[in-house]
Image 1: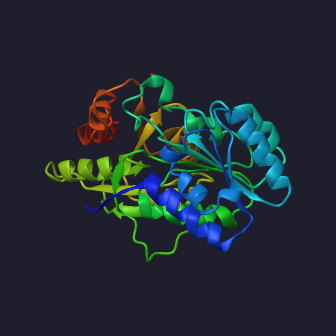
Image 2 (image 1 turned 30 degrees about the vertical axis):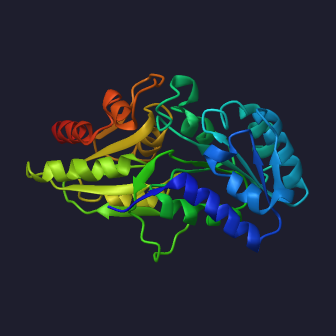
Length: 310
């Protein structure tokens, strides 16, 4: 499949939007060459603010700019924003419901070389609990571009988690996008796997494995974690014998939790696949970490088998 980088798509989209909307400003916490916000800074230096390693201050400055009518994008690794700036995001951005867009780059385990201090396994949970916050997790570079454009049209704060590595492209650029959209990547009639981010491609591979065992698996990309389209979720579950969720995030408070909450009145068995109450660690490459934390197609296939026996 075609492989593209979500970080590059994010930075390039900011540049495009900056040409269309002079009220867009971008703030960075010393990682612009990694988050790719530097692309905006190179094009529009007068609207690019490098605050240094001061994520809390960055969130507060963005809130002030938003109060003056700006749409402010703040950028750092996902572990630092929202993590390090949580109180400022809560008090100065979410309570007044301001147009501050938060980019958590190198999300999940994708910053494989820097270890647990730089890997975010809790960012969905942190942001999902905040009133007014929209939480986005794109599947690929094409959807990243669509999301960033939609964020500028959305009222209130948004959080988008960006994977560090090249990912296969599933999104059709010709299809209309809106925040809240779910995409059926693969159809099936026995079990539905709701996946997000890098785990969508892993789920597709798991479905191919299950084909060999006579089990038909539907794969759905949930890239808007909040607000979750509960009716669409239930529609994708119709006729299914069970549900599996897959995410590169803690099993607590992420996609799996959101799906279970939404389906609490249903009678379908649900199995959650994610990071099992653990911090990350460093590794020589990304795939080693996905294997270490049981986020491979074979692990999803095992959950599918288990849910069929529930």
